[in-house]
Length: 228
View 1 (spheres, rainbow, N blue to C red):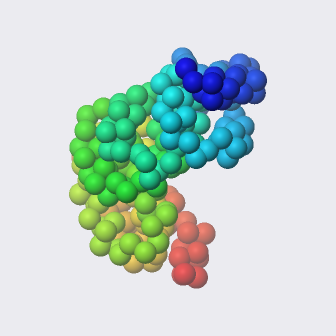
View 2 (cartoon, helix red, strand yellow; view 1 turned 45 degrees about the vertical axis):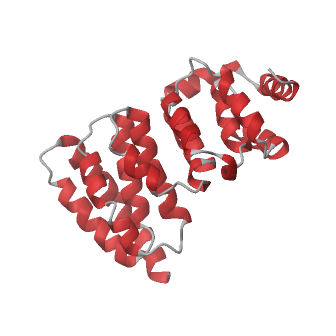
C-alpha cells in the first residue's frame, strides 16, 4: 500500500466511531466492512485529498466501506474508464455505497447515458439500482437535456417496477420522481406513468406508482413547477 493510501486510511480510522454502526445497520447499510465514519467527515477528507485517481483506486482496493465512498469523492471523473465502472459496480453491497458512488463520481463521467441503459437490464440488485440511480441523478443535474431524453426512460422504468427487490423498486420510484420534478410537462407525463403503474397487476409496480404519485402530486411540487 502506498504511503498516501496508508495516510488516508489512518485518517479514516482516526475519525471512525464504532458506536455509529448499529444505527447504520438499522437504516439498511451493510456494516460488515464499515468502521463508522460519517459522510460529513468523508466529504472533508475528500475535499482535502482529491482529486487523485491513483489514490481512489487504492482506497477502493482496501474493501473498507467508508474508504470506498471516499474513493468516489477523490477520483477524477475524466480518468474513470468504463472498465473501472464495471469493476466497481460489481462490488456494491449496500444502497449507500451505490448511491454515493453514482452521485459523487459515475454521474460526472462521460458515460451517464450508455451505462444505465445496460445496468437497468442487469439481474444484480445493486447494479440495477445503480442504473436507475444514474437516471435520477441525470434528471437532477442535466438541465439542458430535452424532455424526450427522459420520456425515453419510461419503458425501462415500467420494466424495473416489476422487480420486487426493495433497493431496486425504491430506485425505480426515485428515477420516476426526479423526472417528474423537472418541469410541468414531464410532471404530467410522469404522473400518467405512475397512475398506470399504480393499477399494475404486479405488487411492486403498484408500490412504485403510488410512491411516485405521492411526491409528484404534492402541492409543494406543483407550486415549484408552476414558478418555473
